[in-house]
Image (tube, rainbow, N blue to C red):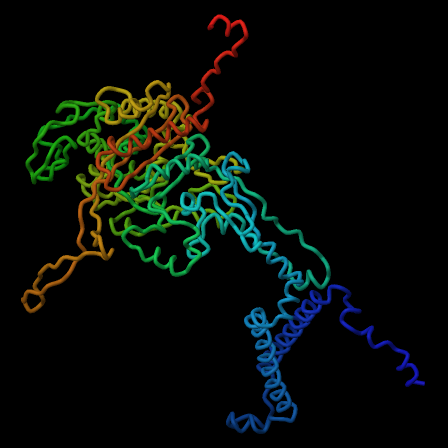
Length: 640
């Protein structure tokens, strides 16, 4: 009877395919995974209870007073021995399972063709592939022709990620190696709270985020243009919209091609180039001495403190903050020790803040900074995103500042985070040090180009606000701080206009390049000296020089120090159009010399290109030439 029933039973119905249908490849490992997890959980719980019970067990009467080893031998039972055997068996099985997992994970994927075929059908692997297929990335226009990152079909038919601005957008998009950029973070998925094995086994589908197409605030044509402006020069350009914080363009040179970094050897070579540092985004992660462009910060501080009407005198022998200190002189003067020669900028006489800003008087702004004091300078610094620190040593510690950006998630903010600019305002610094900070020298020499563009944006914002820079087009604008009032912001713009529009201003080259366009601007030039490491032209290695010193025994000994030279960087910050600025620009060119000669003309070119792109408003776009009237037969007869 039993044999006949057994013969009638179809054993094939017990196959995995019959039990799980077409999803056997997916549900079998999922079920086994859940079973394994449950089993491990039960075992861990059992071990915990056993451990607790061991400590709660009372001593038997015969155990009292006996040595521990004797007690262990007397209390060992067959059950104890059996448990120990099972412990060994469990460990062996666990290592077998883990070894099996390692094989299928690391070796079968490359060597086992059957596994490769099955893996292709596995839902989990298909999900991983889909997750890696990122969306397209567009510039601010959203037009297909202006795609920044997209997919194309390669010669062998495979789908490849491509970039229209491989070099111009490299620092923003980032590489697949090292520090991530927008390409690796803007499509980042949230963590799935549901275990994948449970999802596959139960068929309960959790809705996933899609890798949707994204739109950046970058203008593609403007980004290409500013990259050409720095061709053959080291430096950076940042272009913001001061009204909403849009990053319209941002470029650092030298750059690199995203395709180059696919090769590990090439990537390591780029990383090892300490002289040019092509992987470094100078716009956000390089400190520069801002020079006279920082005087705009000092003006903002004066307005916040109610000292915008201060009058100070420029002296033929320079301004000495304290008796016996070195004199602070104008750029038109020359100092040799305590001796000063040359005329004061704008004349050696009393000046107000407007005239002093126009002619860039170092003596005036040094005195203004000292009158403001370290506390007022520190307060204004915080309002514009600069960190005031106590000591020069603290100023040298680079800290990232992701909170300054307006992003949809912290991963994006961390990827493009700038290093935070610093200024020393501690009690130990002297009046001379504070005077130097007022003119963008000394302990104020830790500024990024992005930071200087943000300072210009304060004056450019109609309401006197500093908006958080944003790179995602669909983000709502966010305010970083209310720095000045709308009336004070309007006054700041007029002061900046004297530099570019009035005779004697240091940036009138801007007006000459924009003549006939109707575009009014404001700005500030700057020239800053910086001690820079000297590298060998052929080998690219850091040069050193030998010096002598006496050791503890009083004997002379030689030692090497890095060789340096004084580099003169060219700066210009600008806003345009003056009545309602949509551009806040910062340009720095390493070794470019005077700001009026190098950086200012570049800023003017950027303004003209932005006008052509419609970023200044339709009223400034050049009108297309009128078409000649159509020729009629009567017209042709008259001409004949």
